[in-house]
Image (tube, rainbow, N blue to C red; front, side, top):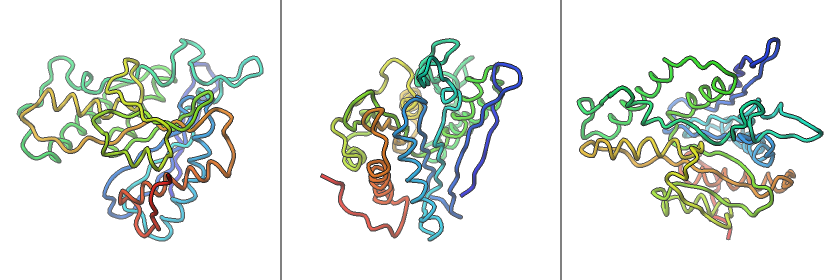
Amino acid sequence: MIRETLHIPADTAGTNHELTILRFKPDQPQAKIYLQAALHADEQPGMLVLHHLIERLNEAERDGRLQAEFVVLPMVNPLGMAHLAFGKHRGRYHPLNGLNYNRDWPDLDAMLHQNGADFSDQLTDDPIHNQTIIRQAVKAALADQTPKTALSRLRHMVISEACDADMVLDLHCADDALNHIYITPQLMPEYQDLSDWMQSAATMTAEDSGGGSFDEVWPGLWLKCARRYPDAAWPDLICAATLEYRGEDAVDHATNRKDAEHLFQFLAARGYISGAPVSEPPA
């Protein structure tokens, strides 16, 4: 495991924030899996789930069983983590502009095609080639940006890390709920196993729920590219989902360790971890 710390200058003099990224990368990864927790920084269950998943990934890396690169941001929102007010941890909304941290993430298709840009002459009948062209264009567009605020710097770092992932999982929780997930309808029923392994009580689907949530950024890019360039070939839609782990008070090692084990088994069943004793999803 490689631990990387990125520094985010704050909006006031003399302070800054730190974003921690944990990387697990075999010599020849077949895919890139991106996981994050606490985008709503007052939602703690996902952080503990990733804490225990990191333990399992460390074991798998040590045993040479990783078949994919894993990038884990166990506390993705240090700005929200620092938002304490009137005896309570806030962390869901930015204290200066009131923005929900899981809203208004950018439309990458619109970003790529601003000012009349067109990729028609670069796209072919090779889906991997076309995916590479678009990913390179996204990275180039991001590299040209100069974020001005702490929030925009944080978002730029996160998008830059997730933009070439083959699976993006965003861990949250509700106020008080059973496990449930949000996912793009075009990914179902192919990813019913994700819902099953999570023991989800409900699977809610939306291609565009209207708020610009983080999980909709990634399939949204490829769905819009496929519609914009219908004659080009495109690979299967990447999996992106919001995993809601119960309520805010559902933070305990026994429960969240089991959640992490189920997530580990899902990833193993998908072939991203070899040699794991995969069982059937829990009923």
